[in-house]
Length: 298
Image (cartoon, rainbow, N blue to C red; front, side, top):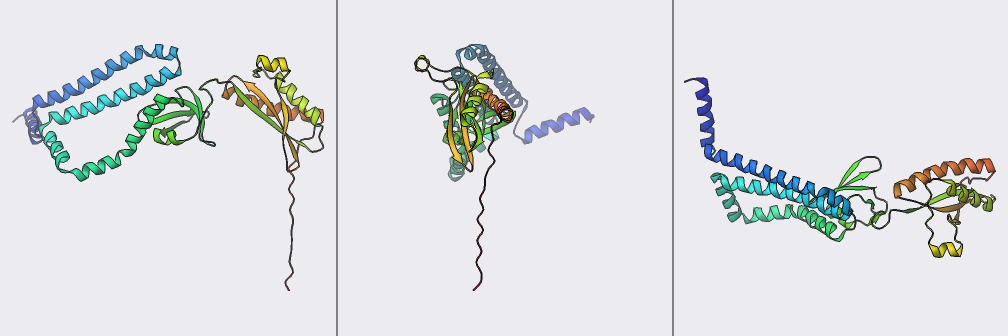
C-alpha cells in the first residue's frame, strides 16, 4: 500500500475512533468559519460606530468597549456549544454530565461565582458610571492612580503614570472607594506645601510662594465671578500645620488636569527651595527630642 494511502487510512481510522467523519469535520470547520465571520462582521459594525462614540464622549466609549468585549466572548461561547452539539459523542457526554452529575454542576457553579460576580460588577460599572474609559482615577485612598484604558466582562485595565497596565477584577474594583478626577471637571487644585522654620519670615515666605505659583505657566485662574468681586486671591497661601519644629505653608494652585497639576507641584517644589535660599527664608529642619532615662539597680 502506498505511503499516501496509508496516511489517509490512518487519518480516517483516527476520525472513526473519535466518532467523526469528513462531513462532521466539515461542519466543525464551517462553525469555526461562521463564528469568525460573525465576529469580524460585528467588529467592523462596531468599528464604524467607534468615531461616533468617541465624539459623543467617554460614557459612549465605555459602553462601546464593554459591548464589544461582551459580544466577542458570547460568539466564542456559542461556537463552543455548537461544536459540542455537532459531535455526537461530545453531545451525549454533555447531556449525561449535566443530567446525572448534579454535584459536579454545583461545584462548577460555586467555582464560577467569582466570574459571575465580575460580570455583574462590570455591568453595574457601565450602567452607573462611577468611572469611564479615559478617566483618571485612584482606586482606594492610598491605591494606584492612572487612566482607565479598557473595561470588559471580567476586569478593568488601568494605565498608570509609570506606563504599567494594572488589571483589576471588576468585583474588587466595585468594592473600592474610587477617586475620579475626570468625571465632571478635570481641573485640579494642587496643594503645594513647604516647611519653614519657626523663626522664618512667614509673610515673606507666603508672598514668595504666591508669586512663584502665579508665575508658573500651568497655573489657572479658577475664581468665580463672586470670588473675583470679593477680592479672593488667585493662589491662596495658608499656614496649615505646626509640628516638629516646622511651620507648613500650603499654596492652593489650579491646573487643567491631574497630571499637569502633579508636574506643576514637582516643578514648584524645586523653584520654591531655590527661591527661599536666595531670599534668606529658613527652611525647617526636623527636630527630634530623645529623653533617656536610667534606673539604678537597688
